[in-house]
Length: 152
Image (cartoon, rainbow, N blue to C red):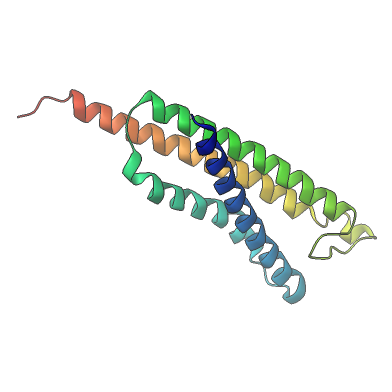
């Protein structure tokens, strides 16, 4: 894979990460200020939307080819690494009380405040990787079976 393509993929993944985190931060701000409970939907919804966008973009390129398998593996490794990195930075900022959305601290009722960001980071890593791997495997199996089936 060319360096230019690797850089392009890494920048795209970083932009998607930043958009996802901005969306979750906005939902957390709304939840913190209005006491609405949208976070549960956002924790699962944002990663699923990312997978849907990936599937839509990838639809034209699906081929049961080793080259694309390596590309998908590399993209998922980049995704995992960037999610871990962004999550670590966000959690560090939250713990130092420098995050965009202020988290209440002190007292027993606020002991785990800010932990929803770590949970979102985990879901942002796990859900897309699992769903993309399952989807790629299903498409690969369907294409392979169609090629092997006798034509009437």
